[in-house]
Length: 137
Image (cartoon, rainbow, N blue to C red; front, side):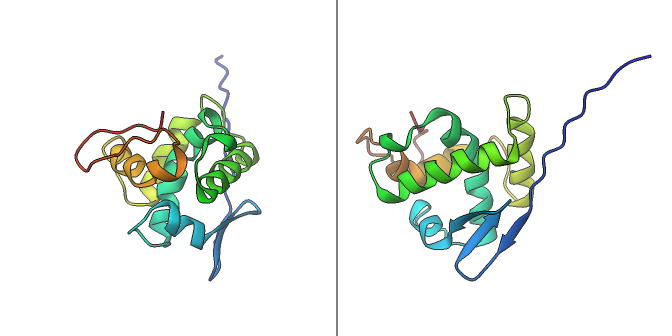
């Protein structure tokens, strides 16, 4: 007889006029629009954030971000990451679910998403040009 270890992630997402709430953690629509200039602050943009949120949470420190919006995004990402219960095994499935919900394609959309929020998150000073592959170092 085989044994299967199945782990489920619980996400309860609510939208209010001024914010998105995921499992009790609020993310301001104002900050979302600042993080992704030109994308607005709709649910699809929120899922853009959710796709790269694990990276913010596990690879960045709040102090690294050069802007208030970047610091806010990293701080919230760390709380959401822990609250949802993400770990190394669940990050990729989480990103794929967020992409499906936001009607985006992984990995094709990752370069576009990181390009959009690069200046808010990464204090490297590099200028990101459209069409040039970028990373959040």
